[in-house]
Image (cartoon, rainbow, N blue to C red; front, side, top):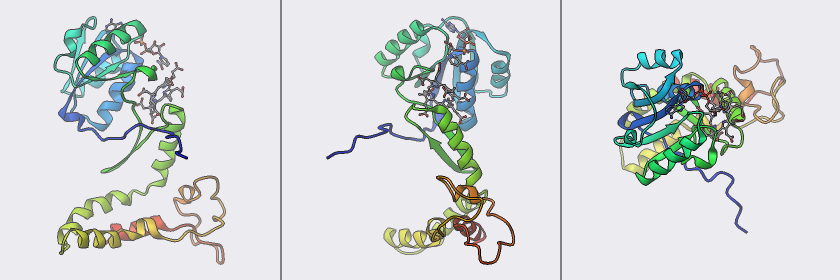
Length: 242
Ligand SMILES: C[C@@]1(CC(=O)O)c2cc3[nH]c(cc4nc(cc5[nH]c(cc(n2)[C@H]1CCC(=O)O)[C@@](C)(CC(=O)O)[C@@H]5CCC(=O)O)C(CC(=O)O)=C4CCC(=O)O)c(CCC(=O)O)c3CC(=O)O
Ligand SMILES: NC(=O)C1=CN([C@@H]2O[C@H](COP(=O)(O)OP(=O)(O)OC[C@H]3O[C@@H](n4cnc5c(N)ncnc54)[C@H](O)[C@@H]3O)[C@@H](O)[C@H]2O)C=CC1
């Protein structure tokens, strides 16, 4: 029997800085959306249309030269030249009109607080240097997504970025055909995923993500005889110094 798909959303990482974004609404929710956009993609050309703007949104826009503020009411003409649309006003009827007009122009729309009207959702974003992890709960609980972000942020070692910075150079040094390179890269990075787990987890660890709580990895020196935590992140450190 076919299992139902729990989350049919298709994840992609957009080059948002190559696109033009229209954001309608300059209040609290508009500020949240603009913050999320600029945190990941600070050079994005965002046009914000709103009757009023929160001072914090004006301040954020002032720090990002590609953001333009238009004081006034939304009009369909703002959709011309937009690639992606965010609705964040306090007017649900306006949101429905914007979605209809945007869809007529084959544009994708995100409507704050109205999942059924969204073509895409925002995610909670974990960032460590070049590494980016996006968390989606399929709209079930943004709060759980936010909590998971914090868990992952704490669990992922800072050395991971050093590893990522080194990988292109390592890849360049490898000889052989594509398959041989994949094999060599798999071998170089085996420590990231391969260290065998110990069970039961060490004291202080537990719950669903014992390894996540093992970072930093427990007391030092580790008590004699106590089982070692999973040491995949120690391997990461070694690889960072490769
Ligand atoms: C469907 C989705 C569409 C979209 O907005 O893209 C959506 C919808 C709704 N959000 C609501 C409320 C809250 N949203 C947050 C926070 C975030 N919401 C985000 C995404 C999403 N929110 C998309 C699904 C994401 C997923 O799949 O998990 C995050 C991840 C990304 C971002 O927005 O940047 C960001 C966390 C960023 C971070 O910190 O990492 C908090 C918590 C807080 O603010 O602290 C609350 C209050 C607590 C609560 O209700 O949980 C409500 C109810 C409104 C009401 O009750 O009136 C709806 C509507 C509904 O659920 O019906
Ligand atoms: N602030 C929050 O954390 C939450 C908000 N909501 C809901 O989300 C909606 C938005 O909330 P906020 O951002 O706090 O409201 P807000 O009142 O701070 O912002 C709404 C913005 O929309 C603009 N606007 C209204 N009509 C417009 C039009 N025709 N053209 C252009 N701009 C227009 C206003 O000028 C204002 O800047 C509300 O319906 C609210 O009930 C729901 C949950 C939490």
